[in-house]
Image 1 (tube, rainbow, N blue to C red):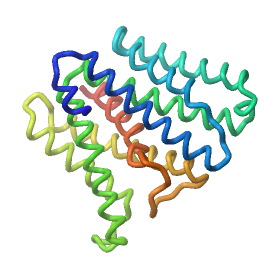
Image 2: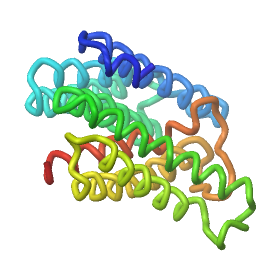
Image 3: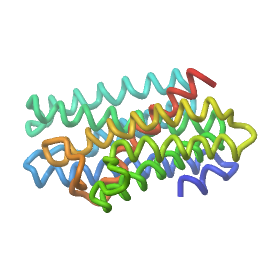
Image 4: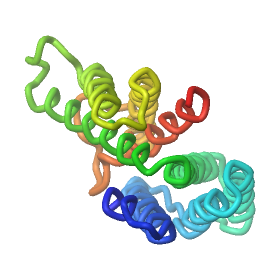
Amino acid sequence: ALVISNLLDDSAIFIFVVVGTALAWLWDTTDVLRLRGARINPAPLMVGATAVANGSYRWGIEGFAGGMAMAILFTLVWSVLDPEQRTTRGLSIAMTLAILAGLATGSLTLLHLFSAPMVNAAIAVAAAAGFAAWGVQQSGGEVGGLDPNLGMVLGAVIAGLISGLAAETLAITTMVLASAASAAGLIAGRAFGSLLRTGSVVHTARAPGLLTPFDGAVLGVAAFWAAIWVFA
């Protein structure tokens, strides 16, 4: 859906899909957290992610910064008003989710405004990295002694190189740098996701939840956009 909406002329449709994907991920994550006894209300987090996407769409990088500030402020205010989130644990979990979701929606929006092929490249890098990590997990480490994290790095860099070669508007050097940055973000996002969902960092098994594969992508696309912003 992200790829198809990115190719359409109407940017509003793409923003709608981006926000909808982020809201689904937030709902899934908070649902898993509820099973662990952490009752995090997804509503303020969803409002924050929506604000970042819309701010980025309307005002660019300034709107992105303003939307992130609103997401953080709204999460803080909600934690004061909601007794179940008025704890250090509840606030830290809610704030982490708000920042991750805001980074994802804002970064994808800015990438779309920068260049539609960049969005498809970012999605391809994240998908290739996730598929590589899954393949290494399924093999039980029998693929050249790789672990899932190293598999993600190789998958991301190869996808970035192919994207740079396939698209005339994308510089190969920039794409390799962006895919390497994205790989680091994917690993960090995967670690954050497993920490939120299970209470510990899990590298060898999938954390619970329907949208667990998106855990790495929320930071992966943010790192990809940051590299594009710096180098392109």
